[in-house]
Image 1 (spheres, rainbow, N blue to C red):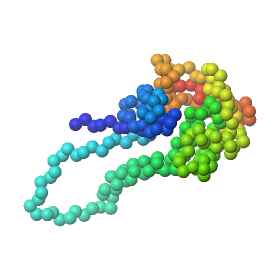
Image 2 (cartoon, one colour):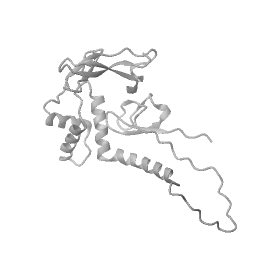
Image 3 (cartoon, rainbow, N blue to C red):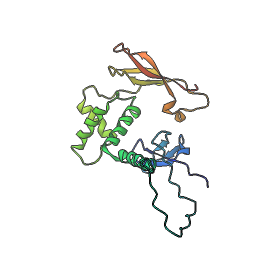
Image 4 (cartoon, rainbow, N blue to C red):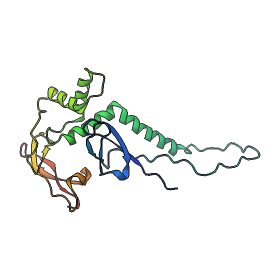
Length: 221
């Protein structure tokens, strides 16, 4: 019997709807079942967890006399138990407040990189609890943006970078840096480039004079 392929999970960038899909679909576009927004299914949205396969082996015949109880070593069965625990811990983490805050940190620093400076986890956590003090629901990304603007004097909306440029922020002073968008690899469109294909290069920040990094080129370009 052929083994089933692993599944991945991601969230809609527009409404946050969680979507599960086969790993072979990574890089393809689909429509969000909740808001109908077009989504590019990422390759590293979540850890792929292969489905549990039922055993196809027939059960062993019952012995005429019950065998003596085996003596188990201390290490026997630990791997299976630990594997189950790690898997369950991962999904518990995704549904926990810490997991949702980490997800928002990644979303704010990636999806909104052209409009806002990079935020730290402590800043997002502070904004999260600020919103939660007014509602029982988990904050949406837009609510966190409003809270960050309210709580942080230097967190303000910036116009997107010029056409053909990307906006980066210095890791030291958070100053905005426009840098030309690197040429795409042959045969690949912008929608099929993955974040992990980027190669980061060091540059000197024009604001503070310290060395920072920008996405300078793509692998195989």
